[in-house]
Length: 407
Image (cartoon, rainbow, N blue to C red):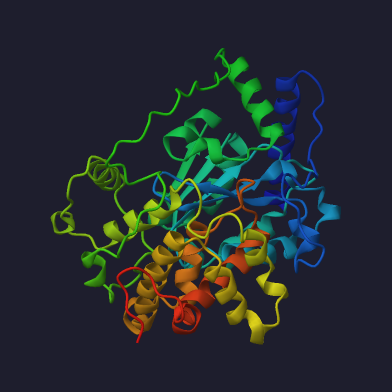
């Protein structure tokens, strides 16, 4: 009882400080659904429509970034917090098999929309090792004394290893050192709060970064240019049984060094790096940095609509979509999916089934021409890519590519 009263008291102090900071009484708990359009048929529509949790691109190592925005939490009487917890687990289940990052925007949590202390305790227990193992960083933006008090309450329950993943960031600009900042869809309320904080601390608001005009690509450029015919690197073929292949991240310094070598037209000896996950990350990076996804933008709506296709017809639907691709895109996709099919055949060793590989490669092969995807698009994308991998012989059997002979 005392802890709950203390919990509420500290939040009220935050509210008072924020009101003073902004010069007037602030309006808490924005219920905006942000940029995402959530279908009423979503199993957690009552929670998802607030866009409290949203996908915001990649960090500097290509790991998916998920943001939690407290300013979008509605008043407690409008939200079933048990359903919120179930939704958080439902959304994170699409990522926890791979390395991922979470950004927690604390601004906007207040006495009207806060979950109870017992809810926080339940949440920590339910987010077991499955969720914590591959979480590589938890960035807490605009922490307050309240956050530090909660941390002290939970500290006896939190492992030292997990504690090292928690990083406090006082200003939005600090995110630039860790994430692809321009991909973030930060709520306007959080941006205004950040500006007020910087003004209070006598810091100038962060000036817009002037991006120089892009340089023409080098003749040898491999990353960030149109797709060229490629084959899986022999180093990857030799590592088909490596556990977690394509799931793990790698040293960002090594990745940048290898990209630079490739873009300069130089050869790379992956044996020098001693890490099978480095060529795996390089392949994902190459696909992710294409100006247009390998599957192109044209079939995006068809792919998103795969869940509305009768199950018995989905494989043929996938076949029609990929056979409509330009020749070069089809050729690269066929080689890639053939390789991923081989990886999935060794899943007893590498733990990477077709479904697991689809979760890794889905957003590297197709993305919306309108920008950052929402959680609602992940399921159909992953289903589509999973079908390509699992039914590779059926989907790709009748169209040959240069250098290939059909049986």
